[in-house]
Image (tube, rainbow, N blue to C red; front, side, top):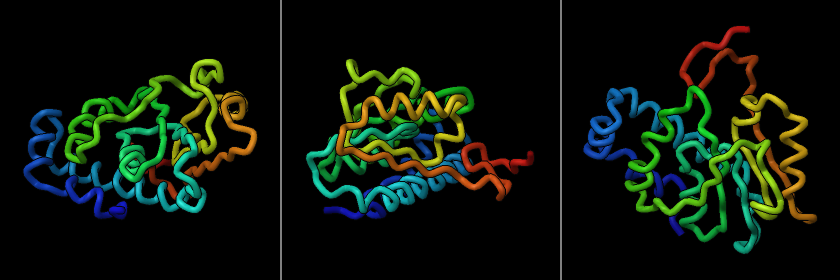
Length: 181
């Protein structure tokens, strides 16, 4: 099994980055920094959920898949995983670059629900044994409803793991800006 850092090595290929930069019309240096940020976030997310990936036959839901990098890795090592990604305002770049990046990883067959958490429905999406999010819930307007919806699709023996950034440190990594209240 390839470790996660090795898996993302193709995303450091300068020619591929230049091609993606041309296609997405995003400056190559900005693109490199975004790739580095989101690869680091995927590695960080994997370290958080790895202790709970005990069996391969569990069904996993990632809330806020972004570029689907962590989804891609989980699928490559044999997990049944689905991402929830509504691609809201301010995250348009995710949709534009996602297919090119997944192509670099030879993994474009990612299962995605293009809906918000508030649209989760057991009758439509079924149930999940592990639901997680990494740096996502701070973008959700109604946390009480979000947890209610996630709980409704969580299997009886399932678990949820959520990580949110500490905004006492005034930096917003998604937009690359200083964040002051």
